[in-house]
Image (cartoon, rainbow, N blue to C red; front, side, top):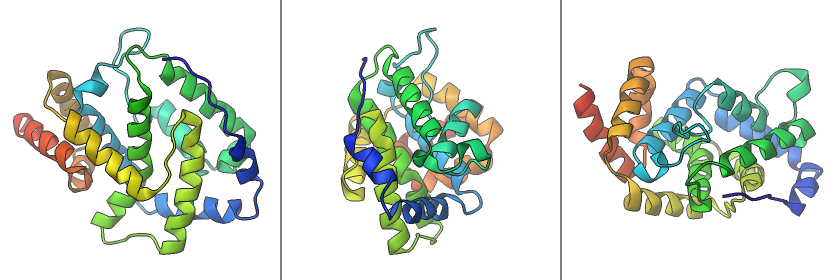
Length: 227
């Protein structure tokens, strides 16, 4: 899969009067203690519960981890969300350097063997939803204005991966449908879970209730083997 994504609306959005408020909403959604780590774990658990995603490989033949796994990807996420405190990376997607890195990240993932646009659609929807689902389970859902501003921002940001996250409800439906069709046990999934659980057992347990139902069933089954 090779593709170049151009979003003519992105430049208008980052220059709009409401952009700064939406960026503040993103920070409010992601910044509470433990949300970033738990949301990242949620996405990785979702990834490892889908054998279809595990068939996607890098050019070296390695597993194609989610964009929330690994230090490089974590830096990317912080910059995309406007949470990187260094002056050179401030401003979220309003920073041209951040948009350049996002474009490079999209091209990098699009070249993976077996990558499909539906996989990018799914994983970006899961990323967008992950902090909201985590906060709901903690009975700490963001206020309506923050939630709306967050969705405007994250849908524009992730459009750089060729995705169209029209509404939060549509993203939920996409993820529920994908996981019902693709969530299964696998040897690769178990291996990844063993490693993840050995390093971050607390976040695995915190993320488990926020998983999509089909993924939660698979991960729960795999955890039985880990124990």
